[in-house]
Length: 204
Image (cartoon, rainbow, N blue to C red; front, side, top):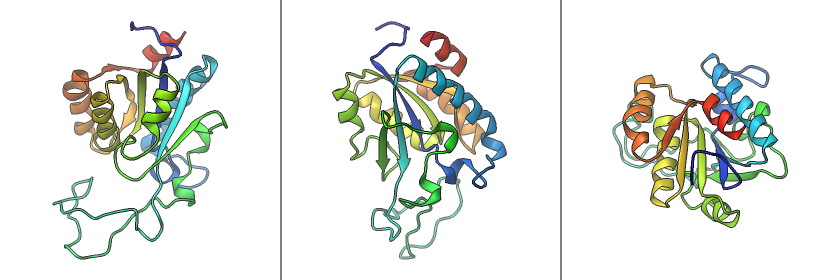
């Protein structure tokens, strides 16, 4: 395999759903506006060159029976977690407005939808099966959060021997220092890390 991108490559848009990206039906969060515009450009190129497109998205039951509050010191944003025994909580319920893919990245009937219940898009989902069934060897990762779902998915993909191409400006995290740490010191050990414009140029 070389640097060219061909039919053995797929793009995985990770958690690009309303609850994470939008203020409301019409407004993208200020923190995500640049990201969304870049991902739209990437998607347009991917569709033009017939790359397989996957969407992985949180899809929890509204009664929280698909979630577990594990023992830990903080939540993902380093805020203190509830005391042991308090009720579990989830903000991304299946079928709700919040868990829909943003309209700017509207999916088609030919895309692969991967509902997920944990950080990794591989954990007990059909992602690995769908990739292998379609002879996909390389995965382009974009979306958020860099230090949570993207990282968990990248580690899983690496252990499954997929070639990874991670878009440094196509991922996002509220903790900018965490994002930079992963892009400069962690992901290069398991992936190629490139900007979206370079990824698009490979497609062309």
